[in-house]
Amino acid sequence: MNHEGVFLVVETQLSHFGLSPLVAARKLGLRSVFVTRDPGRYAGPRGSIGPGDLADHVVRADTRDAAAVVAAARSTADRGEVRGMCTFTDYSVGVVAEAARELGLAGLSPDAAHRARNKLGTRRACAEAGVPAPLFAWAATEEAAVAEAGDIGYPCVVKPATEAGSIGVRLCRDADEVREHFRALASDERDFRGQVKPVGALVEEYLVGYEVSVESVLVDGRRRTLGVVDKVLGAHPHFVELGQSFPSALPASVTHDASEIAEAALDAIGHDFGAAHVELKVTTTGPKLVEINARPAGADITRLIAEATGVDLPLQVVRMHAGLPADVTPVRNRAAASRCVTAGATGTVHAVHGVELARRVADGIEVELEAAVGDEVRSPTSNMDVIGRIVAVATHAAEAVRLADAALGQIQVEVLP
Image: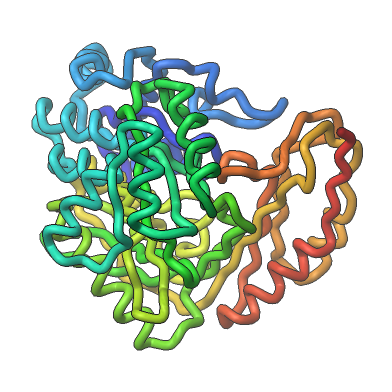
């Protein structure tokens, strides 16, 4: 169905998922405008498609500033009425919420957006509401970080307040590691997207357990939980996400408790519109909050949800932001899993083996590599270092996981130092 008007996408993730709001706007027949501070940031491998290729129009603006985004929206008036705007990256959720409010468009409360965007704001709001979460403290100096870590106990987690994709998140086992990592965080006053970072770092209790996420959408004033995602993390000291599967294979008692805590956390920050991706650790004393993302889940999660349930979440989210009715009712009952391809060392890709073998594991296995021979890669320290993805679909979650793992096992990336 075609709908007249303009839809703005303000920045997005640097992945195939990042294209999904523009694809959704095109499906709806809306004229899409991509607003970005730096179009060159989205240049991928040769021959790949970027946001600028899918958008009907690209507007360059300082997306760190809500007034600049409002001006960018008004500059498109000759193309039709602005029906809505959204972002699928954490770095822009606050600015987009403010701009949408100024323009009278559907969107998340700016206060909720800023609480979700800033991990310290999330921690404080959830602590006040009694949401189960790790002990935490904000440290403005190196010595304060060491003191807080001593009070909380080792090992602890030290991380920035406003990064995404596990950038800068590190497990620290002693005071020397806390000092070293605090200095690394303080050495750059700007984040991955060039925004000014708060001075200091979060020091948190390390939660021992496995990670899940709860995916939900607030539709017509009612929060609808689409399900729980099982997640795979890489080895310490980093927290790189290496795979997901949906729906969860965990007992209903675990997924029920995780969903309840996710909903309580969203209520605590005042989340009142659209999609949310809430990460939790399941510990011996139950699920505890890791963080809240006030947008659809990244990586392959929305793809897994679509394969499993038939719900095109990015499409429904864009419909909501455009003021259109949304429907997240499942239409099928399957399962899907993804696994990430990473480099085992830092250097230059010399060869990639086993891609065709991976595809032969089962019908429908998809393998997408973002690195080729001659590309520079590195041993992963954040989700930004993933160089490929595998997706497998099956009748049951356990089968999808086994297929994805088997496919990943076929691939070898040779790296020369």
